Figure 1 (cartoon, one colour):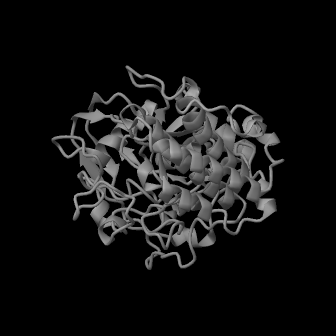
Figure 2 (cartoon, rainbow, N blue to C red):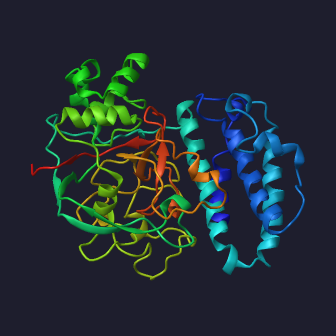
Figure 3 (cartoon, rainbow, N blue to C red):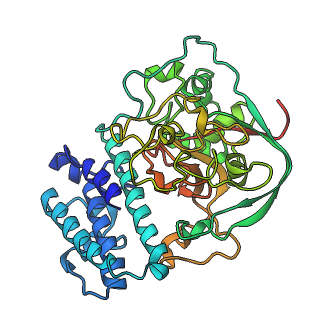
Length: 418
């Protein structure tokens, strides 16, 4: 939690008051609101619910509660120094309670709060990117020397079952329970779709041809008049970096253009973790630190760990560096041969966000169930701004299919051999 908080505070070291309060998009709150909400949520669940203390800052209750104010009314915020002092005071009290906490009973909630902060910080980075305060494709992007895009290798996943989902105190409610899923055989791209590959869709007039789009997708395209991904730059046309900032509609249209489709979330998870005998904890094995045998991520990154994925916080000197070229991390490949299952960009799937059979809500009824509405698509994996303790094959992210400012890309699947 100390490691995560240090990373959180680093995001605000150079932020101006104007950026702190700015709303970049109607679907996202200002970065300053997210900072206050992190402290509010920690206070609510630890100090009030577990320690039984009264609300220490009732003046913030309506402002920073998730259901307090509409997002359009969250720009009138206290000064950044005031909110930072609020976070520091709450954390001091939380650490004092931790010395007497019954972790056998409370461990799952502490993991939830750690991930809650991390997820909001990734949203902060997205808002900063939307405001032009954060680069998504870093300077010095490595481009393909050959303008002819090489064919993508497609990995065969045999028919059969695997254990989908996650168990244990680190898993969120929508990841549980783990359950057996049978799948037909399929072929999945070994790499994420790159900028150079997506340029073929743009150059072929993909944004102007309705035959590649679903009905809802074409309606969205006509309304927005989108002609390229949200974070597109001219250098992306020959780039080996994954395309970033696409809606589900754009990902689906590109897959149709290629004669393929998006993977279901079960297909993605099986390809990311199944080694023909069991579901691995991570694409590369069971542990983050192979040499020490430690599962801890809180002692700093080692060379082996940093070689597995492009994630925020693995390298303390490059917390937010943006995307990297595909096929950069060979040590992080899955048993099926997939690159970048974690890091770089989230991956759209063809699945709607629904509960697994046997689902039980935690820590409150509306955390996931509010979004089991048939209107949110599942994303898997994680982006370059995702923190390591939010990374696991069972983790499920969800957004409306028209959302574009998230750090999202995709890979494709075919039902027949290439």
